[in-house]
Length: 581
Image (cartoon, rainbow, N blue to C red; front, side, top):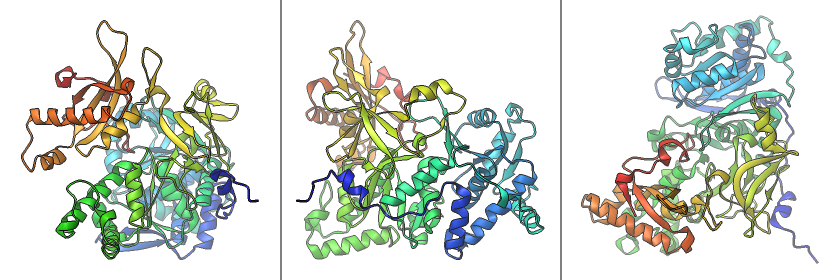
């Protein structure tokens, strides 16, 4: 009789085959050799025409830039990279991580924070967009290393420009200086230094080795097959490990191609130009795409099939479903086959809707400290409401679970970071007996699927010891189309030591206007609609989780670059003027 194995165990028998690589140089040379004339990148030239860059050219550009960096004396030194997603960014990242230690920096950070990370990391060279470099140069007195070398991606007049470094490096290499080829990389030493602010403040330096990231590339490929014909559309910021590992290094390992989005307002235009097959995104982007699809469906369908609220697709006759699927696919470039969703939990209803449209949506769970992926839905098994199953060679378990099986998620595997930069105490508190303590709360079902329930730090504990996970209450609020976004807090009232649930809400004025049949809502009408929405959420929750008060915000919450609402700073302030009990 066949043994009924848990799905996590069944998955182990199905992994896609991978070729072992342990460092970026090995991966780059392997890909250039196997995929030589295949397209690695599609980009636009100065006139807007799409050009292709082969794997061979990509490798040669990295060797040329790396040769210039060695000639400048930057071997084994810290090299920062900053700027929007671009071919230059990708070349710089790999050249810097092979020549020395790469320090990818968020281009959206305040200049003081950028300079602080340069100083802390002891950066000797920074490559980036002139916009970012000019801001640093305007505050050059704050940069501790007076000899810091600045190389601009887009200022061709600069003698130290990226293009000039490529040209001089190419000549030097052709003249026999092949020091770059001779570099030997210890796969287990620090080669990638990332600063993460997360959603709870206090930036930490995360130290990763190339084995950390290469193991994650192989593990991901083992459960999600990347085809050589795939084109990845890169939208999320490349300084973040999620986009860097899965949206850049994974396709390079796999022989696929990459195209960079020109900016959020150009997404639709770029989809029609590049025809991607894979998109990495965050739930917010997925929700926006879904919202537009449903809106257009309700506009274009015959009257009798339209819905005033919700998705009409499932009620359509089969012949109309086929037409709608084709139309939707065409609006997304015609070739899209999969969305990969991370950074936060996706709405399972949206995942299900995309599945009906024959668009696979695979969500996962990861952290910068884990290079980043820990769990994911796969080519073989998917569960719309779960973060997924453990990726190959990675284990997770729940530490100290409560009666509901919820506890801190801890992770072990070759993807776990070396430690926090120059912070042994924090490292030892976080990595215990080889297990990385994520600070995230979750539970695991009998099949090995992981469910994320919240952050340890954000749990609200009532006076009688009940645990409330704000993310759960936020999920119900955010599920209402009249609410754009919400943040749930625990607050205390004067002369009362009980903790009460407060929701800070940013209303969806466009949806409320539609709901009111086109009339611009008054402040009173917004209050009434949000109050009714809160009341509807409370009906779905046990008493101790009820929202006791709410506030209405007139602007969006401040977010991280992966669109997570920050659980610190101004977001956590309760404005008494805009409060209602």
